[in-house]
Image (cartoon, rainbow, N blue to C red; front, side, top):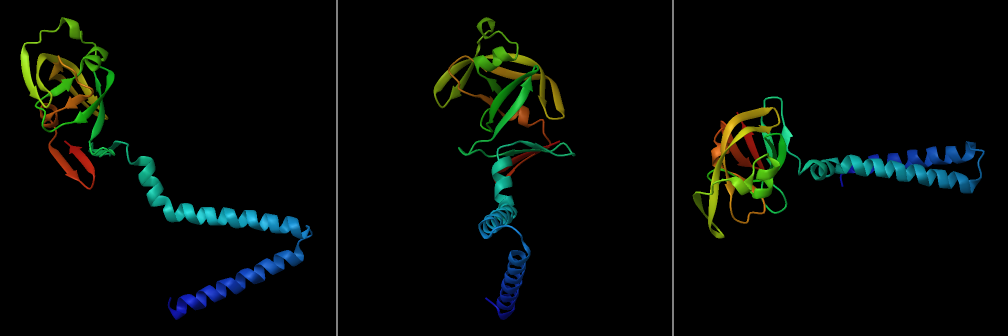
Length: 193
């Protein structure tokens, strides 16, 4: 600690003692009540200092898992705790949660999400085949009327419905290529047009 810091600390300590003593001498409250009020104010003051000092960490925790849109139309998707990038898009007006998968060729909807988007998975023609980590699955090619995220809307978008078991729908390169720039840096994926 430098001599200037020590001098400032001594000055502030003496100043605090003088203020405290003056407050105690001028107050008409009982000593117990005065000390209780002083302790409450000291805790409030320390709490405020802690919040100000930790605001960056608090802000990161509060907003870490929220997709952000800026005025230029750029979308920033934070990486979740499992290391994936998750994004919710409105498919034909229905919110659908996706895992961004640069290894997937298309938008791949599981049966539940396809049904939520107004498609009838039971009456689709599963003529396509896809090789996945779980083996080969049948797929049905579909056209989505609208795909919306934030201020961006795409129409008549090609996608497939997975005929096999798929926990979460995948947002593949067929859709991601509609963006002019895709960047992964500092724990976030950024899409901009």
